[in-house]
Amino acid sequence: MKKILISLILIIGTAHLSAQELTVSAQLKPRFEARHGFGTLASPDDEAALFVSQRTRLSIDFATEKYEVYMDIQNVGVWGDVSTLSKSDKNGTSFHQAYGVYHFSEKFAIKLGRQEIAYDDQRIFGAVDWAQQARSHDALLFRFKPGNKSKLDVGFALNANGETNFKEDYAVNQYKSLQYAWFHTNFTENTGLSLLFLNNGMPYNKVTGTEPGGDPITEQKTTYSQTIGGRFTYKRDRFNFNAATYFQGGSTPWSGSTGTQDLSAYYLAADASFKVIDVLKLGAGFEILSGNDQDGDITKNNAFNPFYGTNHKFNGWMDYFYVGNHANNVGLVDIFVPIVFNQNKLQMRLIPHFFSADGTILEPGFQKADSYLGTEIDFDVKYELVKNVNIFAGYSHMFATESMEIIKGGSKDETNNWGWVMITFKPTFFKKKFDEPKG
Image 1 (cartoon, rainbow, N blue to C red):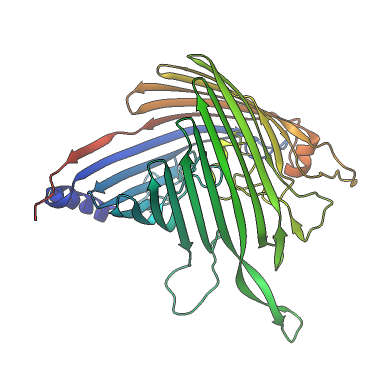
Image 2: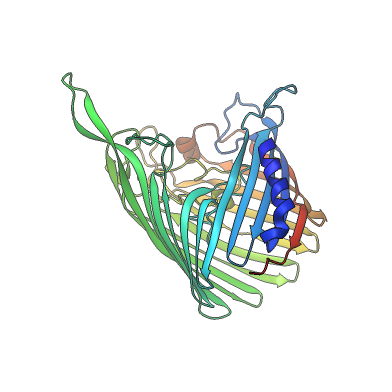
């Protein structure tokens, strides 16, 4: 950390030599949570978890007409996770983002390094800002701007454990490589369309032979799935409408085994909202993420995966679905009815969710269970204390069914709820423009 601060001082001290604009800002985000049935149903012997987590982030943005360098220096932890006499933090300090952008022209640029990748409503690619650590990728992007109303990003990522002289198995639980293309255009002032193609490469073990004793010989390979689809948006006066659909094919690693499964899955969503009065907006929408039947062909995978999206934003804030869980499961049908109040510095949201499984659920006796999983009620409030300082609070409650017990465990009869309070500080310490040297 000492070296980082010294580097920052040097950057500021020499900025007048070459920088066009330098901005130094920060974010402090402590959050208290009380969890009892968050992410999964509580059991009778479970007591509520109480803790305070915190993100501390320092951001440095250095930009000229031709290039930009951006860094997010970040520490994430839980109050008390180290001793009060500890010399270091449990998770240490890391770079959440550290990337450079070079503009070859007004219509073409490259962006490379560790960076957040977020598009549209963040369903497939998102920053996951709710999580204190958030999400970033080590990637290379080519950014094109064909016209004033259109833009195209083409991205590549290749991951490894570290510097090696020979090939070794990739040991991190994520993609080995990916390639994607995202295109967006505005047809009119009110309508927009985005198209996405993602080729996602996951490592898996392939059986290549047999040991003399009969044990299989495996070699790590990469299998690819393809996601293709788009999102349409329409906005006019007090009315908003959005619709999206994606299809997935290719293959995925076979969980708990060697080899792969053929993938065939889909996603369909639409929502609309109407501002009844200036301070009140009502909406309704649905999402369908295809899933596997528990009595289906285990060699096939029909479960849609939203991959790197901000999944906390969708399907209820208690994170029962697709937040590090529910992958390759029975899928989901989510019907939601948001009510939003917004006046001056105060915002309040109430969002009921009605959850059902897309795939077949089997009871312990192998009879088909009801597809209805339960209802979650989410409520939160946000208030701006002063500029760059906000306080948030929220409460969520899950009313689960026996079918939710089957896929999640725990007990539907327990009080499954979650409450939280968070305050965010986002000050800008330093922002100044400088004239670049002539010649």
